[in-house]
Length: 169
Image (cartoon, rainbow, N blue to C red; front, side, top):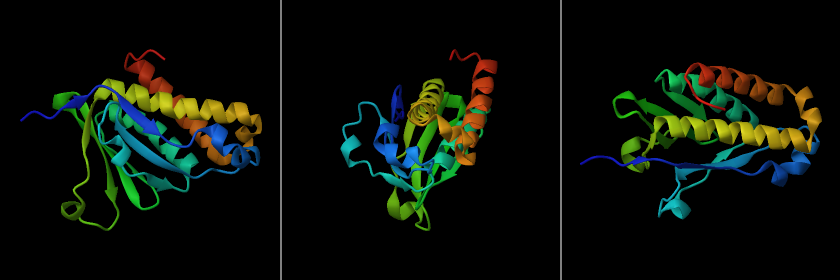
């Protein structure tokens, strides 16, 4: 049986506009995150993973782009889960799943989705840079905050890695 490699991915988190009060004060927002295939019939059943430090998560995901391009796995710690991005070079794909902390995988059996590598990486970059740009438009003074600067620096590194690997931005 061949696993389906999804062509499109949805990254779902609270839009900066909905976090306006937090961002106006320069505070790092919290959110819930979901990642699922574009046309997944069970997308409404996919759980949200809580993330109290969303700014750091965006920076880690942006830094992870270079790792994924080198077929290295990325693991981002959220509040009660780990977001795991595991390259499958022979399939030119990336496994994505949320691993619940301190619960054996056999008991949870997380949904592991497989995505086309280049499309996933492009969508991940668009998600992170889009959120960063919108937040900056809402409050240009965010640039003075360390957590926001980290996202900007990570995105700059991601852009360099993407360009080196032939991606058009």
